[in-house]
Length: 366
Length: 197
Ligand SMILES: Nc1ncnc2c1ncn2[C@@H]1O[C@H](COP(=O)(O)OP(=O)(O)OP(=O)(O)O)[C@@H](O)[C@H]1O
Ligand SMILES: [Mg+2]
Ligand SMILES: [Zn+2]
Image (tube, rainbow over all chains, first blue to last red; front, top):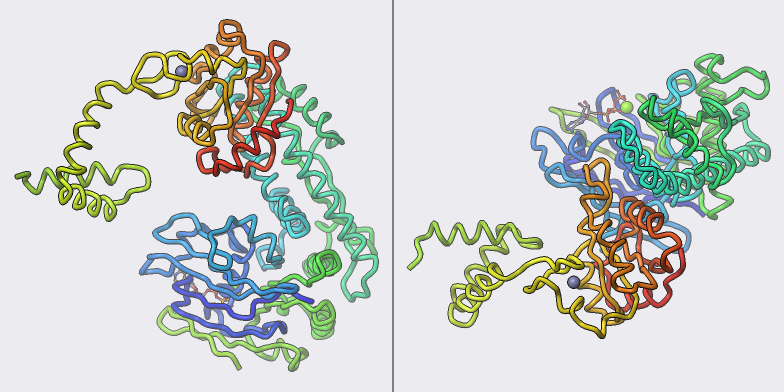
């Protein structure tokens, strides 16, 4: 069983004016020159999950220019046992809307029916850049296992921003702090629990899998001290930290201070010290583990978006990747500049060619 | 006859109403003009009256036409139960469902540091006073399940701790869903299944 889009229509979406793709659930190999509009298609698919998609773009940025009127995506999503019609769009720069089977729906609801994981070139520096990016990566993994993770993250963020404002305004009302800390503790504990669970799923999936990709050992680290183990402990820690936080103007304890630490297991080398190719291989390994774990847990392989994944891999690694994707059964959307990059897939994949003329992308299914 | 600019002015004002846009405002105004005797004139009269008499209840914050609203004025509503809501719209939604027999306290918003709304901007001090003067035994916090709504609920609970029984509406009220948008059945179910904080 798998999750798959069987139909995808893009309307005024970045360089696409009106593209229609009909799909059969096999992986989708997209080729075309630089700037043709390949990643734009992957971005469209990423918006079938909650959030701002793989470029983290605002709804306004996505609207096709120069018209800049708005954009719309329509997809038929095949999930175990049933199909859903999903529409998502934005008009006049407003926040994006979602409709599922003709009814307006929340993005959390979208997360319950679709699971989409991605790997994009911007993540190549994930291990060496700031903790922010790693936390986001981790939270997307946690979200894939638990669609309610997003809600906890939003609630935590809002309560923290409220509390940071009190700190900066030097407000001294203990009951107000207490009310916010109670909520930060509740949401924060859920976030932490979701992250811990996600790492356990990944680690179990990596241990079981026969894979050509290196195992990554993952661990959560706090920028200082330990993450409090219970909701009550977190609440108490926030309350105790109030005085220090006043000086800093922000909260110094909590899950927003968690970092994801990765080690290339076979060598015992921290991920950030690995070669470029090794770092990429670790990420591929993790996304495959995430897909395997999800397939087991929800009974359906998730949709994968692998932007330019082929470019960094030698031919044998590439063949191994394709074999593993096919074994998992994911509808993996992959991009590359030429069709030869997908040769090893043969007819196990659908092929899409994207071309561009005068700022308008065209899509041909071959 | 009105000059077109006055009609335009009316349309502009109507378009500012919640739920109406310029298009529906034009349709509404045209409809009013066509039903002048039946709708427009009585509407204008009653609006003038409401404009002159509408005020907030000095006790609870409900909107009525007297200094003390009917609910605060009625001895029948002195059940010892006090339901705290964010907004008058929430109070009206509760009343519509008809299940609550006690009195209300309208805060007029929620705590929000980011929007510069503090306890003194809400009717929180007045709420504490009412506990004693009205012999309140239970305070039901019917605040929205948003972060701001729940912050306010925790804040009030902290202030009233030990003085009264504190309860909140049962879960199942959708997150971020506002009381005003819930149907009567959901509201009464949430009230019946309220739980201690
Ligand atoms: N809002 C927009 N309106 C119109 N065109 C846009 C918009 N946003 C991006 N584009 C254009 O879309 C084009 C294709 O972008 P895309 O990233 O999909 O290319 P690609 O095929 O993935 O190329 P590469 O191989 O270089 O990664 C770019 O030339 C870009 O200028
Ligand atoms: Mg690209
Ligand atoms: Zn009153």
